[in-house]
Length: 93
Image (cartoon, rainbow, N blue to C red; front, side, top):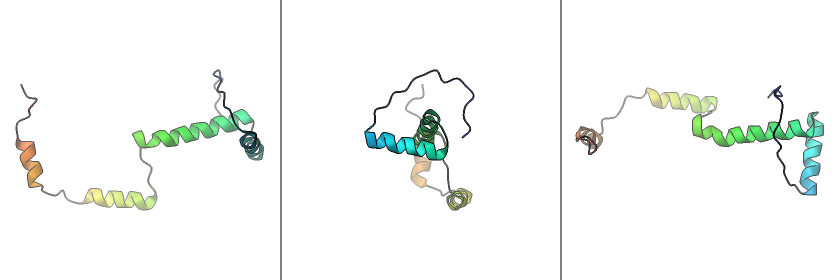
C-alpha cells in the first residue's frame, strides 16, 4: 500500500509491553519505514481484512473456479419452496 499524501491529523495512542514495542520497532526498521507509517499501514490492512467479509469476498483461483461451476448448474425445482412462494403475502394489504 502506498503511503497516503493526506495529512494525518488524528492521534491514536496504544499501550504495549516493552517486548511488543521492541518487536514493532524492529519490524518497522526492517521494513525501512518510520514507526507511524508501519503501524498505520498494518492497522489499516488488518481493519480491511476484518471488514472484508462484510462487503466482498476474495477467493483463491481454485475456489473461484468451484464457485463458477456451482453457479452454472441448472436450478433445482423445490416443491415446498414453490408452494411457499405461491402463497399470498401476509404483509399484502
